[in-house]
Length: 314
Length: 303
Image 1 (cartoon, rainbow over the protein chains, first blue to last red):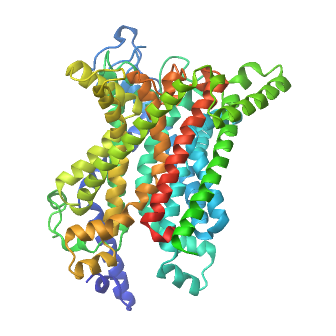
Image 2: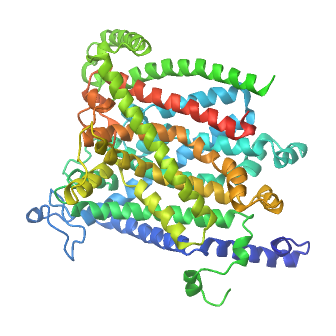
Image 3: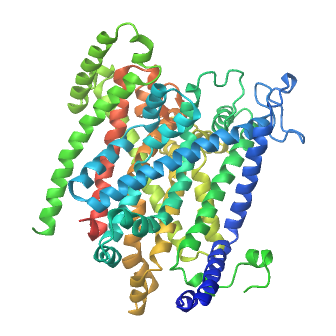
């Protein structure tokens, strides 16, 4: 039924079909409702990040050291008398910039190395895979620290060096998926039509690895958030006045005195975990929307949440 | 050539390349520990660079010899102690990964087969949520909950069976999200393929379709990421050892302060840092070899 709906030889119908296809993709995306929650939270986080850039300096009150959360200061105060909510808002932008840039670099490297290893095969494959193995058997953050100390520490170099170090998982993932499709009928048709290497990678391979990479993306963001904690103190004049303007350092500081006062941990940790969950949900929705094989999603009824959100259809 | 002969050839080649990788690992570990900020190079070498480079070469040779002959005297500890520590860390890492798979794979299968069930959404979200708790928080949470609020388990120590529970739980929870999520993603892709439909059409029961046909290809992503996950788990395991005072690698080699499970090699001697990195790397290489063999057996396309 889907095949009849999305394929037509008439131009006017093609436009109509494209519209239908987009609407079906949107319906597959929003079917479970969770991706919509994720999108909402991510846009809230985007707005909060911009607000955090406008805040000049965190509220500082020496008489409120380690104060419990109040209504006007919902995250409480840290041991230096800084408002943790202000610290968190200011720290959102640098933290997520490092995470996103580092993840982009590591996924790019992973896709390049994994596809090359799987498509070329032979001794190139085995050398690249042994190199990958070497990369993930070393503690990556130490190598990143050496790189950062060499080129000078700032957020951009930290993100780049983290990306350069943590690509191994992506490369192995991509290699596994590409080996799965390299001997199928699809690749055969690509080779018979005389597609170039670049075209094979861009048109045939990338669409197949997107689904796995979306899951990898979620976990990679969290890993880079943990690992950048070691590298941030290498920035000159970082943290001179005792305020931890980075989400990862706030989580670390909250955890270090969790047994004494756990109120300082929940704010930053909650924001971080909700963001990771939202990324996962949006990734799930995108996987469903991008997956043309998922025909069943079109004939099922929509969930209660989705029906409440947009009544009238199905 | 027959399949089994090719498999044996592959195993032989892998063992040789494992040896080469281990030697390279020790060389890189020496370089990293030497050049890391706060290490020997940045603190002492600024005046006497030639002298310290010669010391780098001698340490490199010593550590290569030491690790390859299992003679770890130069790290200042009796060998049996180091071997015991390595076995402890190996046990914790390996068993926690196996346990995470035993819990995560059925959960992932359930979540993939019933994607519109609210319970399966809760399982997936919860396991990912739990595994995103930073590793330095997880140990603290578990101790606060199960040793202080509900005092049923020991907060630290090693020797009784009850001591294993909390550190193992922390490591299992860290790996739970990865196993569940990749299993769910892999299986929900695989069950839409044509060969599953044809298997159903031939009249196989749902159980047979899932176990015999769908499970193998859907395990591939999980296994591909197993190797990197072993590395991360071993490093997190060391931070857990410090939190629960377990005589594992990190504790015995004297890693006093840890941020995020990354060894503070800057504060220990070069030899200890190198031994640490080489040990963890050796785990990863061996476990990865086992996983690659499993991957070859699972999927004929890898041969």
